[in-house]
Image (cartoon, rainbow, N blue to C red; front, side, top):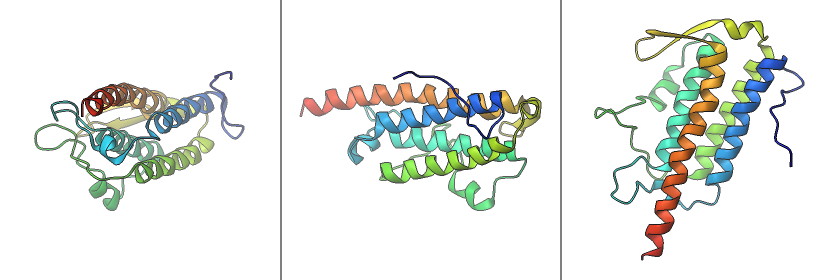
Length: 177
């Protein structure tokens, strides 16, 4: 198998490559988590003090849905805000997610990819230079290229490393019982 970042035929070249990076990381996320039991998805590490896989996937989705709407130039709907906020709880940690199935987590991720693909189909390579606001109070700025698309791919991959560590701990922990 040869891996490559090939854009979609319906997208401009750079937009397509960036979309391909996001899509590839979501496919990898699905691959590394697909055989996890609900117990493993909810596992919080050996001392129960880490974010679970469910929390991490939910966090990835939550951050990315905000980026998708920023790229669209639309505010996030109130129903989506209430469903995917706050990004951090009162202790500055990811909100607790428990008993959310792998299928539901992946369905949300797949719906996000559909939305992103629709947006990317309409973007030109020049549109990637457009600036969007982000941050807790919209105090930061980034181009669509960096913030909207590259960050989505990079952030996803970053948290996959955490999920892989949780999987190692879970396997070691479950063998000891």
